[in-house]
Image 1 (cartoon, rainbow, N blue to C red):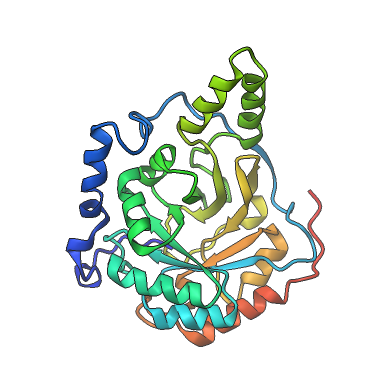
Image 2: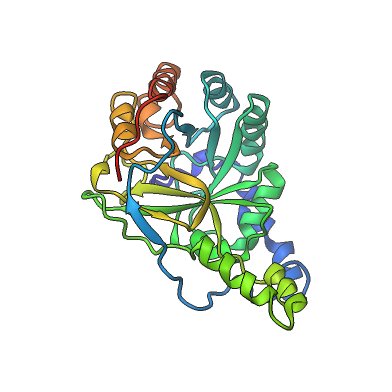
Length: 305
């Protein structure tokens, strides 16, 4: 849902940027407060998660829906009335769909009022900047869409739910480095807790760098382009997320049912596919059609793995 066109006019309040908000946090970190010193830096290389063919989602349920790149409270309200489960707001200033943190606060409030979860989308922000922005806007879900934001995962507290974005080529091959395997980490913790100094291992685990994510989002190589890729070739990573995986990239009311029938994700993400001419404001009729077509897939049989 990210586009790389820089439109300063849409970032209406530069003084409310995540970078500016993070200044006090950076001071606290350097003095030893807040997160443990060094928690944002990279440690040993991540071990690849297990991979299975797309199609392992639970049959009988329609996927959840995330409408991303929402820029107004009115668009958020309309999307939630149509049935959206997540409302994405781009807080990275170099996107034509970016909004200030002040506007994001109103969009997040509208999403919550409609029963949806507001999500902040970040690209190159640090952990401190992401935390500061989430706290100000009043959200607890952060989408890590670029290398910088993905690297910040280790510094994010568990109270912020992480949606980790990976990119797939036109052929459906995932080319982004993956986070650590959730089951592997749980097994390591179990062994340490059963050891002689198990009490210390528990403290180290809580204070240590974060390695796990809540959702994995698979997007195309050029985010926000509206271009689809080969969903049939996807090999979806398993074990490195807690809640499920989200299909994104070139989805629209016209192709979302085919995408779900092919890949069987736990959720789908749409941005460009439901906008008006100009690619920013949402088209209510397209949003309604997209969500209705997703709902119509309930009861479909899962594709054999």
